[in-house]
Amino acid sequence: MSRVGNKPIEIPKGVKLDIKKSSITVKGKNGELTQEYKPEFDIQKKDDTLVVERPDETKSSKSLHGLYRKLILNMIEGVTKGFEKNLEISGVGFQANMKGRSLELKLGFSHPVVFTPPEDIKLEIPENLKVKISGADKQKVGEVAARIRSIYPPEPYKGKGIKYKDEHVRRKAGKTVGVE
Image 1 (spheres, rainbow, N blue to C red):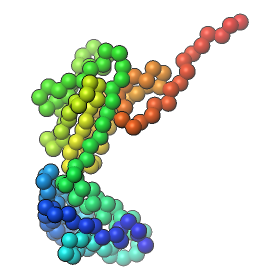
Image 2: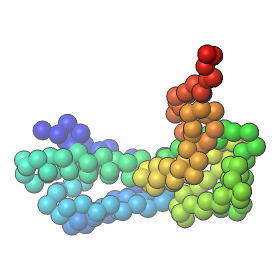
Image 3: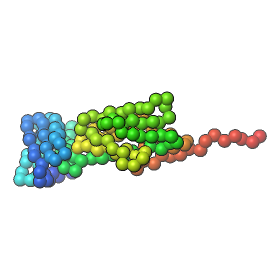
Image 4: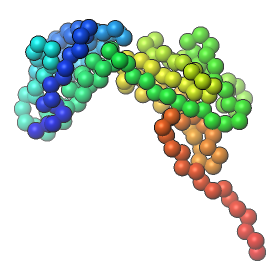
């Protein structure tokens, strides 16, 4: 019995749902998202709640039951509130600037790195060396944040690099010269 899958999803005001045989589309103030699902699953709208029902008791159906419910919940939350990830850049001489929609990073390489996000993802620099990534699709926001972080991941000796705001980088001691 899936505890996650059996919970009904509350549909807030201003959200429109379009349920088809194997896809669901959610529209709200932040945009429109579509998710494919297996046609054996039954998604029903009852008043202002949404219920996901699985076809049988097989292990794959049970695992997909909670997954589809959570994906739909993330879509509804994305079109109403949106999602965001925050990155911090640390290092001497490192810079982050916006060039139109693109993010230009100067990270000590011989050239600046320019990153252009997908159309529905918004990048901002609220403070110096801080990057805010926001959008309606939770998966895309996380993927863009991971791709930016992978340009220069934090290193354990000096702590330089791009890291998530709440990420803790475990520092290592450098090599020491032994006295004979």
